[in-house]
Structures are given as C-alpha cells and as structure tokens.
Image (cartoon, rainbow, N blue to C red; front, side):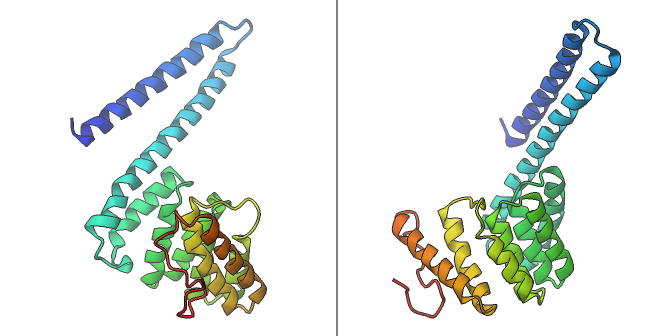
Length: 228
C-alpha cells in the first residue's frame, strides 16, 4: 500500500472517530435529566474544537515530515537562501501547528538571507511567542537580531533569556550547538560574565555527555584552538 493511500485511510479513520465521538457526546447528554439542547450544543462544540485542533496539528506535522527529508537530502546542495519553495509550507505548518519548532527556524533564515529581514524577524518572534520555552527559538531570534536586525542590545537580551530556568532543548546536541552562538552574542555585546557562564556550561556538557557529543568540535569560543 502506498504512502498516500495510508494517509487517506488514516484521515478517513480520524474523521470517522470524530463523528462517532460527537454523536456519542450528544446521546450521552440526552440521557442526563434536565439537560437542554443548548448544553448539548455547547458540549459538542467544545468537543469539535478539541478534535479539530488535533486534526490541524496532525496535518501540520504531516506536511513538515514530508518537507524535511527534501531539505536534508534531495536539496542538500542548495544553499538555504535559495530554498524559497519552502516558505509556502512554512506558512501552512505555522497555521496548522504553531508549536512545531523547525519551520520558524528555517523560514526566518530563508527570509532574512533574501533581504526580507523584517518578515524574517517577525516569524522568529512568533515562534518564540508560540513556544516560549524553546531555547532554540530564543537563540534563533537573538542571532537574527544581531546579524540582520542591527539590534545588538535586543540580541543580548534575547540570548540571556535562553539561559533562564524552564528553557528546554530538544536534546543535548541542540543545546551544545546553540551555546557557542549565545557566547558569540554575549562577547559582541560586552557581556563577558554571560559568555563565561556559557563556556562553563559547554565544558560541563562535554564531560557529562561525551558519548552523545563525540563528533562535535570543542573550539567553543572560536579562537581557532580546542578548549580542551
């Protein structure tokens, strides 16, 4: 069975479950003494919103899952700024599932590298607003503000917020890749204290997660010499 056929079956199955769930909700409400049509309508409306939200997220995830292999394989030799065909998918995925991280990151840089800087930074900000705990998106916005937005103070402020309690990273590799960028922003902004903190964190990551980070470089301050 082809991938398209499987997706069609899944979509039909979800729609069927939705219909059954909504119908069951209405029947259950009708058995409650004193229940009114208004109450049933409100309950069904709430259930519809919940299921519709789930379907939207599923659609967004499916769209990006289809696009991501093209970015990393088929179009691997195409520089990011030339991958304008991705932007329409980014816009759709943002609407379907605003909590999906990667489209904000990719789309913002494509826009900025094509001199559509304000829109790129706006997309990066929406990513942070929709996913305030994502360290990657805070780092992304900070880097864009420094390199394309001519806003070093704003970049330093956003980079510092990526170190706050409650910030999360997809994995240690993502965190390890992001911290040198944060360090560069802090050094550019004259915040040696924050850069020192980041360097210490990188050394801790190198010690504690050596197996996961075996193939990454250890020149964290980019001075041309390994730090350890």
